[in-house]
Length: 339
Ligand SMILES: Nc1ncnc2c1ncn2[C@@H]1O[C@H](COP(=O)(O)OP(=O)(O)OP(=O)(O)O)[C@@H](O)[C@H]1O
Image (tube, rainbow, N blue to C red; front, top):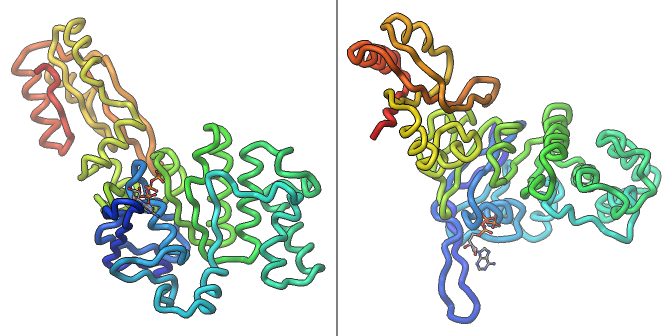
């Protein structure tokens, strides 16, 4: 079942003084299924925030349609829009907590606005703080918490009205890697244990590969490609997705590293993409080729191997040719690095 749907959405902003136009989103279509974690990745200015603001009704599309569940957001009257918005939670990069309120007071706030009575409010706040592991901090103020703890409060607050959809706007970008992992694990629990659909936007591939089921890669207001996380990042079809993979895995030698490797390793240099079982060692051995590993990195995406290894190959030239031909015939991507 589809939870969020964008149909041919474009959004153009007119800039203040000179009236110049900025196309923030350009014919974007995507579908987020109910119960999944969907990631949107892109560099700064790609249009990610605009996309999120369209979904929670803070912006209206210039053309196209934005649907949440059975409702087309922009076709709704203000009152009905508010009802749809109540079913959407939101967390932010800078947490956006009220400094003057306690942790419990922050989580209780949306319930107060929704008119939930005191006793029920207290019950839900205790349950939520317990869920995010901060029940013992209920009476502290935000400034007494670490960044990761603040975001956990942000998550508890976003869940207070029991929304079925959570929008996360660069939710871990202000956090260090260890804290990021903790917050992402919590988002994973929100998805799995509470069944909440999560749409997150980020500029970090690590975030996507840790929690997302599917991903859309954005570039200059357009979706460059979209699909299951492994499919998109193990075999990127767009330059922008390939760049994200290279930056995150650092598995391929840069031009500078290659230049140095060529000087120090006179044999034939090849980079082999590693996906599933490759049978590399056996193939090289069978053709009398010695393969010295000189660069590389292998990581995991959705519990499957992804990365590449650069070898210096020595031995009979025809043996090397035959080994590489055999690998290529097996569907393995091999790049010659000597020229
Ligand atoms: N209210 C606005 N008025 C004018 N231009 C805007 C407005 N909001 C966004 N833009 C422009 O639209 C483009 C997309 O911006 P957006 O904030 O959606 O990108 P982003 O991918 O979220 O980037 P970042 O991560 O830097 O926030 C940018 O060129 C931005 O300057």
